Amino acid sequence: MTDTPQIRRRADGSIDTAHYMARGRACRSEAAHELAGALARPVRRPLVGLAALAALLPFIGRPG
Image: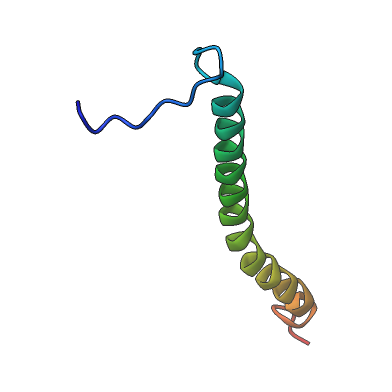
């Protein structure tokens, strides 16, 4: 395991947990934003289609 990255440490030699916690929060935030964006995009098109269908309903199906 010679390709292990350098572990960030504090001046007293302990692992810099604050750095890794902040890095983890940033990664989770980025993933959540990407997921929210991916979920929001497909919803817009069907919503527009439903609105168009609702606008046409009075003209469809009633002979007259």
